[in-house]
Length: 89
Image (cartoon, rainbow, N blue to C red):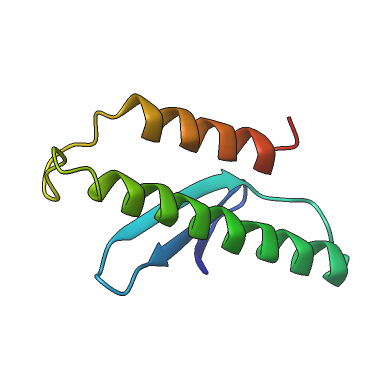
């Protein structure tokens, strides 16, 4: 959920059951329409859940180390695809 709001940005965080933090900072959406904001929140939840799924898939690789930097092209491309989809590209 939302963890911080400023004049121009809004920060969100997602915490998994095994205490992995995923964060996102975006430009503040300019809408007072509650339905638009609710839809945006649902889209954020889906984005975080899909990134979590990519992370889990990465960890299932027997060559992946849970405590090291992720250097997987598949993971990177998956996150880029999800971000583009979230941004309507």
